[in-house]
Image (cartoon, rainbow, N blue to C red; front, side, top):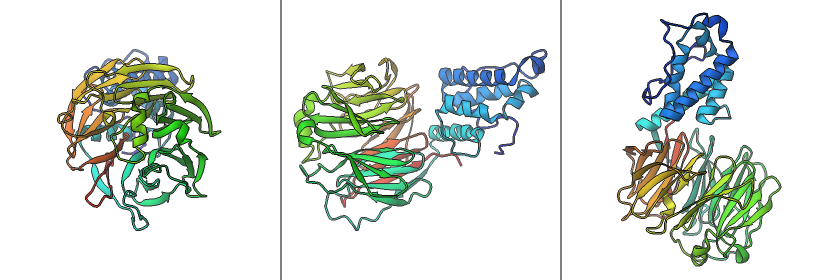
Length: 448
């Protein structure tokens, strides 16, 4: 699609037209429209129309609503050539603040078409390769976590290594290893979580250490924070955002959450009782592969959401220690590996496969759906802005998070899943193989 076209002509029909703003038709334009609608006003109107449509009928409804606006008259159509308008639309509708294409108009169209591909199961599939010849321990090739950015996929392994892959060519480009340190158990060096920023990669291990490396490969991996496993317990999950690193610990009562300022690398908060019931199991994870004790995610810019078997808790990272909301499941227990969060909501699932999407700040239920086979099989899931993906028995199924509607199952079977992650373009899964080496699967839904 040429960027010089004067009006939006992407897949405007995708997502249906129900609830979409109906602008005046060209046959009955407003009198004197060319005189009374200044460009800044029209830009604001177009943005509001797109936001209203996406709020009421889903994100894919924004494009057809915009197409209606641009058909009103030549003046309104001319506004569609404003790259400033498309920048606002990309931010408001698709939450994009970084330009990945030539223009913001192309960015918007690309995000719309990629979301449509997700809806229609249009993707390419790959398995990622890396050289395992430098591995000398049987557990070293077991993948424990995955993290995506716009450019990279990072995979963290049981021996503390992180392997970095470029998404554009799917090549393994770098292996990061933590500095040597005494172990407190077979899996104390296993990677708990990875954070990728523009310039650096940060990863943490179960003994509580946090390591930092330049993303471009300059310099060595250094330890930014040395964990105190005796006083803090096991770091079962680790994540971060623009300003904060957050860790979820199990093993020592009253020290569930740790927060660090990632700029100064100083600890700013320690506390919380979320994982107190899992204290004993926290120590066991250092020596054996047990079921996941907790998951930790960032929702929005400065909210952390954590899930254990019995409780979900959201905490404010700006007012540290303040609990925004709690969600309990005392009857059946929660499936920790089925929990994940996006910018506004989280998905939770009980042990019988009853799943629901709830808003982080209010715990209001957005939708509900059921994952068949969850009571008999291990389930591992994740979400992006529009979809929930749950894998059970080697089959990955996809639901809409806005309505709870079941969409499809992904064709490729993956076996027993060890880690899973998704963003708006990619889905990555690490699964076990007969050789004890994890196989890393990648699906690319990006528009061509």
